[in-house]
Each structure stands twice: as structure tokens, then as C-alpha cells.
Image 1 (cartoon, helix red, strand yellow):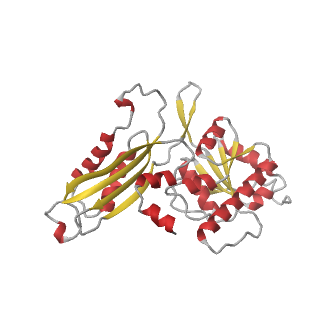
Image 2: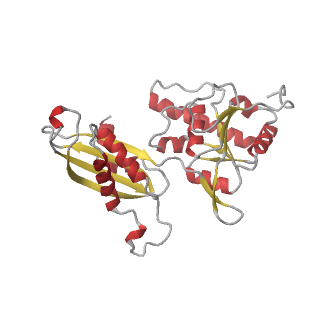
Image 3: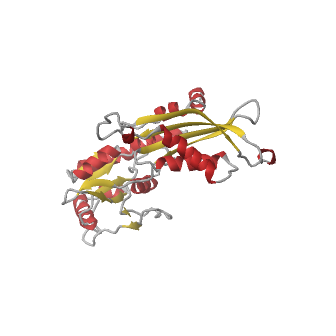
Length: 315
């Protein structure tokens, strides 16, 4: 608990490092940037200015080309301060939370910005600092591959949720054949449910989440063992690579989920599949099994049905 509290009050740079993904990213820092601004919901904060301190960390994608010491090839510190100034100039705000959201959104509009931590503190409300901190990541972007003309094209894979019965089906190869036909040339990403086993119960939510994620991954490897087309992957980089190689992908969720800033807070398998579908800007989430279909998704969701020839076959 002590380490959790220490990290909560640490500089956003430390929080960024503690939750960093395995994908290499650079960081741009803005420390202790002071601005006099009128902000606040209380009457005594109206018509007067107070000191507000900004600390911002921006994670950016690595440079694809040499910098050649050219300022036009980087995300400049000025872009961060300009985002703050533009948000402050847009309207008078009551809440630091609203200001932080606006600053984060403006920064993430920069092409290379991947994730941003924004901490804002009022310094004149007492003998202490009052503030908020948020972390936001870039919205889902489709995978890019080279088309027939050599130009980059967006790929929107078909994400499929397979329950334990589908994975154990005696003719899993025919199920995967059917999925390939339904995808019509799009990549297929398979997400699996929990195995039909008695799982350990920890009575502690964070550890139970990890136990359940590991159980899902065991099922992913079980599926991969049943058909040589299936390749188990865990990171976004691996997913992108496997899609470009034309593999049928089975997702092992632990790494992406635990690295995510705004990822799922539990290990419900169908919720994880929906989150991945949105993360990959999928064309559709296709669900095998009796689970209730999620509503309100940014990705179309539908239920799969076994071919008549497969119904009644032993699992």
C-alpha cells in the first residue's frame, strides 16, 4: 500500500515509467509550468486570478527517420504549452478536471503523441496544493499494411470470441475454416473464454484478475495446439506483425490489458474481446456461445452460429 500511495503522489513521469508498455516510446516533460488564471466553481474564485501549476508527460512514438537536429521533426515543448494556452483561452472553466481533459485531447491530436499524463494543481487555495491528474491514451487506430499498389492501407480485422465449447469442438478446424470464409480476406483475431475448470479463488480483486487472465491464456494455448494456423500473441506489436504475415491470431490478453491506461478493470472474457475489437478498430466482433451480447459498442457485435453440418457433432 505504501508504494501505491507513493506512486500516486509521485511526479507524472514516475507514473508513466511505472505503467509503461514494452513498446519503446520517448517521453517529453513539462515540469512546474505556472499560469495565472481565473478558474473555479466557488464564488470567491470568480473575478480573481490564481496560480495553477501544470506537470505534463507526453509519450511519443520513436522517430522513424533521422532527426538531423531539425526542430520540425519533433513534438516541440511549445506544442504542450500552446495546448494549455488554447484550452485556457477557449472558455472560463469551473473544474480542473475539464481543463485537464481538454489539454490531454489537444496534445493527443499531435500525430506522434501516444499517451499523456496531465497533473494540474491550484497553489493559492490554502497552505497546500489541490489538484487532479489524468492519464489518457490515443484513440484506437487501425492496423496499417501495404496494399497491392504499395500504399499504406487500413486493416479492420474480424475479432471472434470462442467459448470453451467451441474450442473443445471435435471439428475445430471446420469452425476456423468457416471463420476464414466469413472474414472475406480480413485478418481473424480469436479471443477465448475461460476453461471449464475450477479456478483458484483468491478473495482479492487484483490477484483474482491476474489468475483469471492466466486461465484465459491457458485456453489460448490449448486452442493453438489444436490447429497449426493459430499463432498466440500478446502485444500490439505482435498482433500487427502476425496480421501482416497472414496468420490466424489467438490473443493472450495479460500484457495488453495490464499495460493499458484505460483498460478493462476485470477479466470478463467477452468484455476483453470487445475491448480488443475497439482497440484494433475491428470490422466486427463475432461471438460464439450463449453469453449476452454487449450493447453500446463502437464495433458491430453479432452472434455466430455453427454450420448445420457441425451441429450435433461431439465436442
